[in-house]
Length: 133
Image (tube, rainbow, N blue to C red; front, side):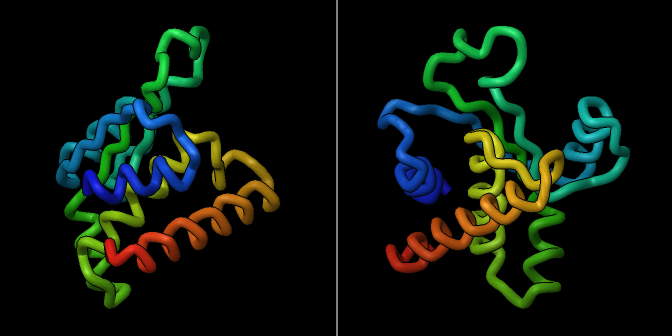
């Protein structure tokens, strides 16, 4: 996951000393976080918490934020999609990092969602080409 994270950050042209936190949890933990922070009492595959949003984004320096991935949900989705578990985990990591980098598909219009989807395809293609998947 670390190599994939570094390649994703590189593809987004983040400075070399950019940092982020990656947590892999189970459905029970991610449900609690989803409920407590986002008001949704159910598991989800990935949650991102940006350190560059809010009242004082400048104090975060080069720290992007936190990406939390549910291994339980990722495993179900991988099985349902007929793809390797690691591939699904890397996709979710990439998705979370894109959110931390300002991409959005939930709160914005179709154009922004399409922009994020295109960036996902581009970066995932690079990861495949580099042999990480």
